[in-house]
Image 1 (cartoon, one colour):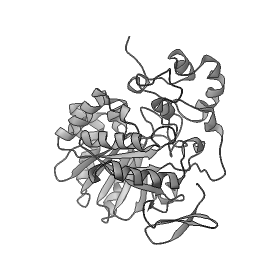
Image 2 (cartoon, one colour):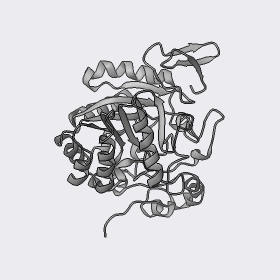
Image 3 (cartoon, helix red, strand yellow):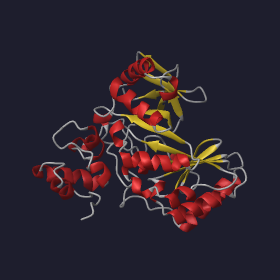
Image 4 (cartoon, helix red, strand yellow):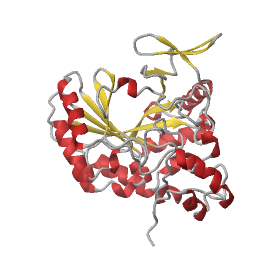
Length: 347
């Protein structure tokens, strides 16, 4: 029988990913935040290891129902910068286009966890997509469109090709960047037809891959990435610094070197956002800074990401390795691109 995506706590118990006696408690978690674990990820979980880093990313935890005062359903301020449905225009020369609001897997630390899932915000309707593309066309300062969601790699090849072609017809759009987890969590979706659908004459396509642990790079995942890169699509990485997953220097170095070995340039290492019910994933900024110092001693420049924080409220990114972060007697302050300092209520 073909393996299927696990979507309920009963599925998890049947797969021995949680004890049967935990189903009632965890059902309260999955009633609030979506659950999906693909066969590729379920197969990686070591059920004999209670600290398995793959399980920690995808298997629900009762602590997700604990919410601290500083957490927010929109921790990086998407809605503050949403001029029309589906668009986030936070930076002058680029926009996010949130084409879908579902994913093949749901990360337990997701900063959009209040927005994504089958029972959350709907995918863009044809009219909403027309309006979003009209907004992009009307703003000639926009040179880059970042496809996100949800995970845009769940589109069919036909829909991805149509979207690529429509964006390529906007003269001032020069770069498309697709943000996805699919090549590692559901690599069979990355077909030759889908890869070709991402390309169009006159526009550069990049793929930013989200992965947090080297074990995610199965042979199938490596092959999916190779299909993209061999077709001329450069790949970048983005990872989240997660307690119990990759918050030691050896694991982090292994992850970054695995990206490079698969021809993927490490790009961002995100400090975990203040999303509801995710405190058990967050390290301190000081710990992250120490890890980056250790990482620089372990790997070459090609394997070094930028350690960044999306400033809560939508105030752009702070580079956590520079003077964009400051410890004061009253707490931590972070500086945005305009030079304005903001209080950061995390640690």
